[in-house]
Length: 91
Length: 91
Image (spheres, chains in turn brown, yellow):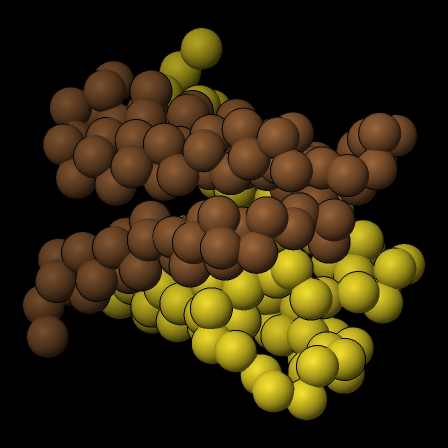
């Protein structure tokens, strides 16, 4: 297996990893056990990866991380929508 | 800001993102809202990134992803330890 294909598979997996979590949240409407701070840090980090991809002109980095940002922003929106406890905890 | 520093900050953020989730799980002992499939896909993807780092001889990629694998394997262990519903759902 070439290194590029390995990187491609790795990038695809880490990009789509949040999809099942998003599906679970939409189905169950429960977000109590999710960490808000995790979502915030992840969205910041992934957004910086998108910027890095633009600066390096690497489309795979831009696309995979932009997709992951999209999913995690959706998760963040659902987090505030479905959060039952009014006292939002950062962790 | 140089591209390398941007990548370094991005990599650090995406690597440590799962830490607050791990702390939350240890504190609350609740994992019902976490997606098992997310953890499995993430660990597979991050492990492939470690392999990619070894093949490319890029220590930052190896270290940041190995750290993320470690945190997510801990999350997976706690998932099975704290899961209350005996019927484990993949998503």
